[in-house]
Image (cartoon, rainbow, N blue to C red; front, side):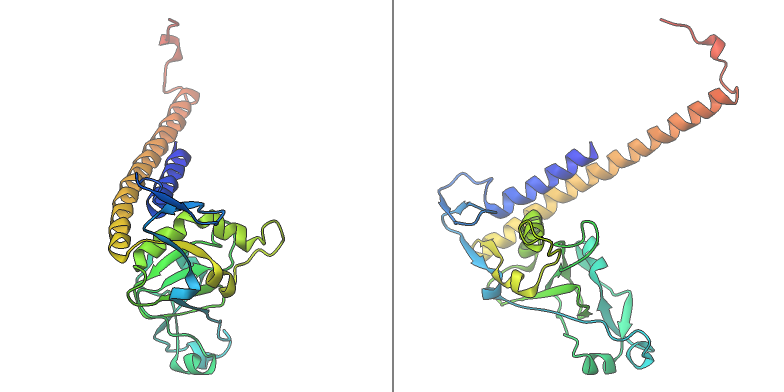
Length: 246
């Protein structure tokens, strides 16, 4: 049940961010991952509308880079959440200077370039000023081009496409590059529509996430009840002699 809800969640995101849920004229894109879009939209490369880069990891055994640091330094674990509002680790001003770490501004989108399991290709929205390691890329969007939350949802909907690109379409690459992201195409509705789409997707996914949470709680309670019932029967707390067959 939970897997079905997660699949439905992804389908909802895709429908909204590709315009598949709209009854209007469409145009072919020539893009295998998103073959048609509404006629008023465009299919564009991210690199045309975003500055893209990644970071690095200062030497962990150099206290000048870490001790007393106050500037958030992020790794790819942050993509497990829809947004980043704080950093678990911090580096110093010396690390920023010596290691040429990028200062990434709030409103940027972060993409996991590598990572175990489902991490690679996942995205999150940065809500604070921070720097990043080499396993993350930032998309600093050109003002007036894209809505940050729309890009987050569009890339979330195209997760499988990012995974295919990172796998080298059948090879053993197993990683995304900044150049891959620069060439990667997503649908570009008018900016006002982007904001409306992002709001609708956020509302729809919250409802689905609530259903997933409630379902998980019910399953957990049923598992606990089953275990307790078995224990009661084994320990003789249930008189099975009183059970009659129908």
